[in-house]
Amino acid sequence: MSAGGLFSDVAVIWISHLDVVNTTLGLGLPEPSVLQPVWDYLLQYHQAELRSPLFPVVISVSTYLLLVTLYTLLDVLAPSWPTLNRYKLHPDRPVTWDNIWTTLGLTVYNHLVYVFPATVGQWLWRPPIPLPRKAPTLTSFLLGILGCTVVFDFQYYLWHLLHHRVPWLYRTFHAMHHQYLQPFSLVTQYLSAWELISVGFWTTVDPLLLQCHCLTTWGFMMFTICVSTEDHCGYDFPWSLHRLVPFGLWGGPPKHDAHHQMPGTNFAPFFSHWDWLGGTNMVPTIPSRDTSVTKGLQGRKDKGTV
Image (cartoon, rainbow, N blue to C red; front, side, top):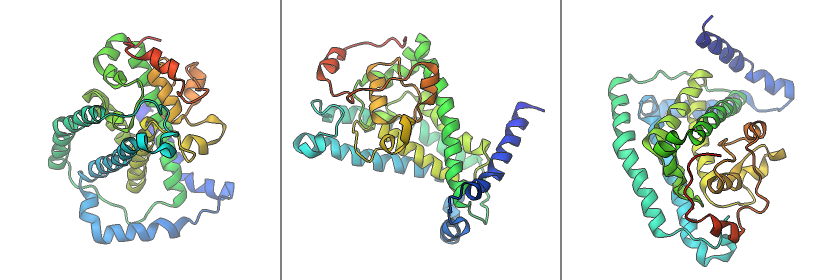
C-alpha cells in the first residue's frame, strides 16, 4: 500500500469516527439541527458563489483585512488610551504610521502580484466544485477543524524550524518576517512570496487530506487566519485563546512575540507540544514588557541560527 493510500485510509477512519466521539464523551452536541439549516440556506441562495474556486480566496482575504483593520485601529488608539495600552506587550513602543504603510504595502503587493493571478488561473482552469446536500454534524465540523489544525501545526513547525536552522533559507525567504522585533497585526503577512504560497498550500491541502466537508474547510481557513493574526497582534487580552486553553498547550501572542525577539524559540504556530519535545519552548515571564531587554535587542541582525 502506498503512503498516500495509507493516509487516505487513516483520514476515512478519522472522519467516520468523529461523531462517535460526541456519544462516547457525552458532549451532548446537537448534531443534525445546528448546521443543516445554515447549509440549506447557503445552498439555496448562494450556491453559485460557494461553488466558485474564487470563494476560499475571497473569505480568506476578507477575514484577514477585517481583522487587521480592527487591530490597526487599536494600535492607533492605544497611545492615547491607557486602558487599552496596558494590554500591549510593548506599551512603550507604539506602532507608527510608517510601520503600517510598510507592512500594508508588501501585503497589497503580494496579493496583486501572486495571489490574484493564481486565483484567476484557478478560476479559469478549475471547474466549480460539487457541493454535498448534507451539512457536517457539529462534532465533525469542530473536530475536523481541530484535526486540520494539528496537522498544520506539525507541518509549519518543521518548515519554520528548517528555515531558521539553514542560513540560506533564512536569509532568502524568512528574514523579511523578522525585520520587526515587536510584531503587530500587519506583520502576520509581512512575508516573502514563498512563505505566503507555502502556508496557503498547506491550509488548502490539509482539509483535502482529512476529507473534510467544504464547510469545515472554510471554517478551518478562517480559524487559522484569526489565530495567526492574534499571534502577531501585540496584545495580551484576558480573552486571548492561550488564556482559555489550559495547561499552557496554546502559544498565543506572548510566545510568538518572544520568538521575534529570540528566534531560536517557539517555532510552532499554535500548540506548544512540539516546542516542548524539541527543546525550543520558551515561556516569557512577563510578556515582553521588560524595556531593558527590548532596547538591548534593537538593531540586532538575526542570521537564522539558534
